[in-house]
Image 1 (tube, rainbow, N blue to C red):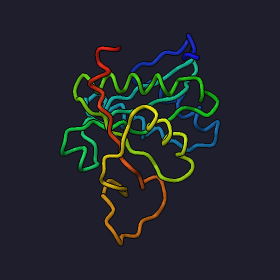
Image 2: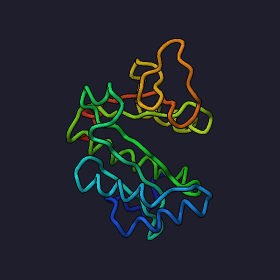
Image 3: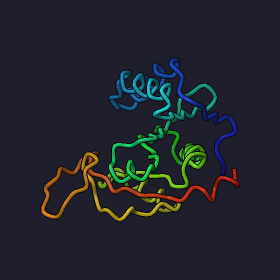
Image 4: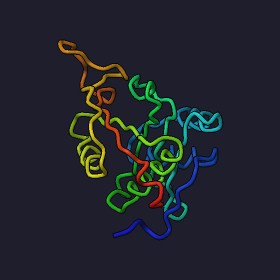
Length: 178
């Protein structure tokens, strides 16, 4: 099965913010307009890329690329990080997420041979954990991080969205395939 034929992936535009906020509100997720306004400003400043997916005229999901991420090992090695990857639940399992990640990895490969990604550690992230491994991502070998700080033995941290395991993937091999 391929992505829907009317799937369009493009850069975030200011007129997308309202539909994005409405789509998330409809499923009970509280996303603020200020987050997407900040993303748009960062995209304009070339610090972030925000890819949005639409099926016909309906918002389906998005992913961002942070060119200089806050996670120190990625920042030090100039590894861009895929962040804030979301596909609305009723659009999942239609290859929309795959198409978004394909485009993100292709864009990263133009600037870096390695892509980074962090994934949460509780059950809600289970599908993402599996997807990243199946796409060829491997743990970066530094263990878990909380709020971009590598957790040390004996540290106590909260299990929430800030607790992640970071992965990397060599995307340079994919450049010629797109």
